[in-house]
Image 1 (cartoon, protein in one colour):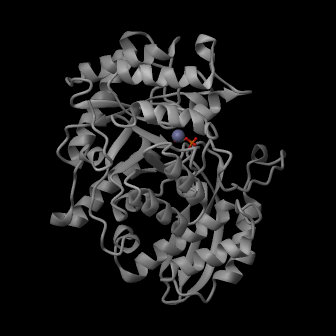
Image 2 (image 1 turned 90 degrees about the vertical axis):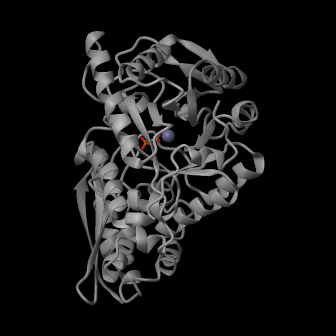
Image 3 (image 1 turned 45 degrees about the vertical axis):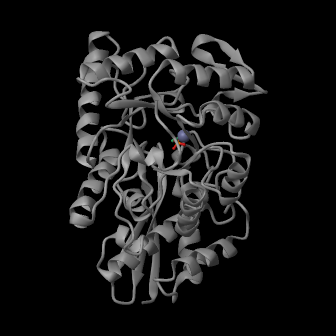
Amino acid sequence: MKITSLDALQIFDSRGNPTVEVIATLEDGTTGHGLVPSGASTGHHEALELRDCDKSRFRGKSVFKAVSHVKGEIASTTLGRDVFDQAGLDAALIALDGTLGKSRLGANAILGTSMAVAQAAANAKRIPLFESLGAGQGTLLPLPEIQIFGGGKHAQGRIDIQDFMIMALTAQSYEETLEVTANVFHAAADVMRERGLLAGVADEGGYWPMFDRNEDVFDALMASIERAGYTPGHEVGISLDIAATDLFHDGYYTLGLEQRRFTTEQFAALMIEWVEKYPIVSIEDPMAEDDWAGWQIVREAIGQRCQLIGDDLFTTNLERIERGIAASAANAVLIKLNQIGTVTETIAAIHRTQAAGWLPVVSARSGETEDAFISHLAVATNAGQLKVGSFSRSERMAKWNEVLRIQRLLGSRARFIGAGIFASAGIQLP
Ligand code: PGA
Ligand code: ZN
């Protein structure tokens, strides 16, 4: 089935910033849309999001150049291709761009095309996206990692740590994970209201962090879990995204809220101390993106009992994941389509992670769209975990809800192992 037209639009993400949507049309009239997300706490090794940088329009953030690249060069390379040859198309787009970071045409232009074609392929076969992406092998519903408080760059640095999240450890089904999360999310509002700290939500829908010390957030989170009727560390575990790259400047880590400065060894020791003190089951980016020595200290100390996810460290990039596996630097990889820029490379990153006995965590960005591609990607690859932000705002809920629909479509084929996924990577939660 041939791709006969490719079109693109400038649309807007959940922060009201411009982003790219691509529409692929096939010879039988079938279409597929690809909507591109956008990060704020981005890693330096990510593929390039092409913006026009014309200060007179959309504060420099318009993506008209990326849109025109889709309609021009990318369309010329894509039209007439077989929609079912995703790998061939993605390889051709990488070659057409010709740079390491997809900086000539823009990773947003390339990814939008790659996603639109993947969706068109599923639509042409009249099967759901997860069935098409996973060649019928994807049946595992993910364990969600859901944000309760949002900080860091998603809350104008109001607190230093970016994500305070929960994971429903004893839930027996995907629905039960959402029930536990809904209960904790609403209990957290009660706790914040009583303390006079309720002040809206951060970029990913978690409560705005009106705290004076980073550790006060742990206290409010533990209180919220208990208020909802659960025992922290038993039914509900804590998961953090430190986004430490944003805290690392001139060789030191800084917690601005507390005006404390740390060397690599001291910051690693703080991460280890928190894991010993609180029921933390997962930490993302505990150390900065190029602090390999720091990562090794943390992995050595707590890698047997805590998931350690590299986000800025790996940027969904196969070469960096290989380096991390060889160095034993983490035990899990955050997977974001737009960090690398094609569907094929993203799936290859997931497969390499799984082959190493590590855990892939499929993730949204802080700037999201109404598209739920990642819910399908998580199930298609049996990734086992999904991170989308909080339990509010429709760009987040679209992803959680889509997994419910996928579960319905899978029927008796659907599997759920929840926190059992940790044991498969040799992580024994205390
Ligand atoms: P970002 O945040 O999309 O702003 O990078 C998400 C994350 O750090 O995981
Ligand atoms: Zn992150």
